[in-house]
Amino acid sequence: MDHMQTLKLHSIKYFNSFISVTFYFLMSCTQGCVGKKKSSTASGRNIGAVIGADESKARVSPEELDGPSMRIEKFEVTYAETGKTKIPLLSYSIPQKADFVQIIRCDANLKTSLPEEPDSAVQDTAPGAKTAPRNTVWNEISSTLGCLQISTGVSRDQHPDYFASSGNWIYFSRACINPARLPNIVAQSEVEPCSRHVSKTSILSGYVNQQADLPVEKQTEMMLLRDRVDETGRNIFFKFRRLKTELLFCDAEKGVNFLSIKRRDSAEKILNFGIVLGVSLIDQPPLPAIHPKEQISATLRDLDAGSEEFLPANFCVSAEQTRKDIESERLQLEADAAAFNKNITQIGQPSALNSITGDEKSSPLGK
Image (spheres, rainbow, N blue to C red):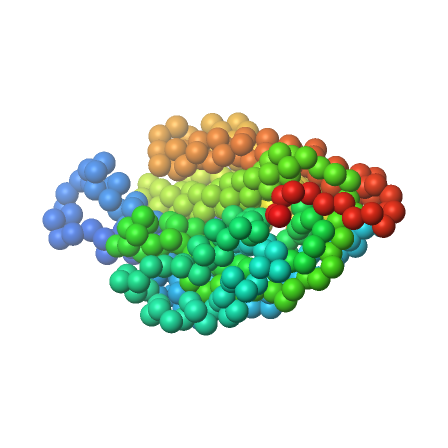
């Protein structure tokens, strides 16, 4: 197929999308636009209007954030076997509108100082109310001596707790969204982007940590790395959504550009990986891989490789800036993922474990 045939097929493929975006463009134009040449300032406002129209479909209001649909269901803790050892494995159903969950591990012997039914305490306050403190229950749990937040953001529906020491444990969780998904009229500093609803597991009794000792500093480093990889991947995902919309707008405003289509196709591949983009790049035994790491890395690098071949200079300035932002975060993502994968060999795998002797080994983390 020659160049012109390929361009024609792509033009047909995206025709309906261009019409839709052009409609948004026309609707956002005031009466004063008629018969006048568009200024760069006006174009900037129109780009914002189109992007806003796309992102508004994913907005979550404070009322929705605190509504029953944002409660984490099926929150359970079981054991996952790896070689001759086993570790606590958390599983849950992430709410459809949530982006990630946060998890706290507590010493179950302290349950008398914690809410017996944390979710019922949450519902004493009307959803979205600004007159009452938000997330009081969550903050109380997280500040309790003997409790530790083991993750600030997990995008997948399972989470192995590699670092629980021997003892009896109970876990709490809540669902959160990307702060950018709050309505524009809501100041992000006023509303924490996490639900009031707190879920908990049953008690994990008599857990014995049979792994090789790992310094507390290394444990903390590993937890922070895992969360940062997950968060950076989510940020990149949302920026790819914006990139796709910006390119679509430029095509509608300036005409179809074959090289712009190539770049948007590359963005589409990334979006197909979903919000688990980052966490797919790390190893978390015994969990299976979500997407092939090599495929994600190659697609991310394709977007930057030979950038002048993807998009002519000045064709879509806003999209080019978004691409540069993504590239910067991609480098950080790959560095953090590589560091995590290098250290994961020390935990959770038979080759990194001491032989089981019946002696209980514990780490001070979480105590």
